Length: 151
Image (cartoon, rainbow, N blue to C red; front, top):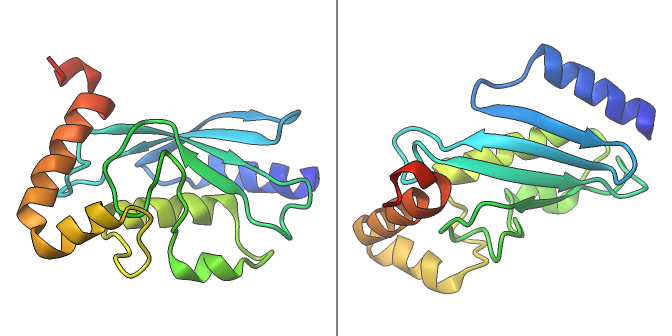
């Protein structure tokens, strides 16, 4: 497994997206720490979100668990747990990578998967009053992911 993870980390360092960084990889706990910048033209724009990926001992045959350490107002993220990533991840394949998970997390920040919510009330607000959702999510981002602006 470590050979696979080291290859993924090498691939990441050579070709990672400009909106994410790998901050740390702890070989002992199999935990990766990422920073994701909020996508432009979303309520998360300008936000800085810390993400942890915990690899199971039988990775890549089991998917990593993902959690966002930064509080976020999002229909697919509950209590910092990314429980509803894009549905194809529900059928995990060893061909998938941690980088792909990070990419899909970024994608749900752009467009939530409303058919698979973790937070029903937030999902309902998104569907019924998108303008209010955007305002609340942007304020939540300002307060939690942009501490220098929270005053």
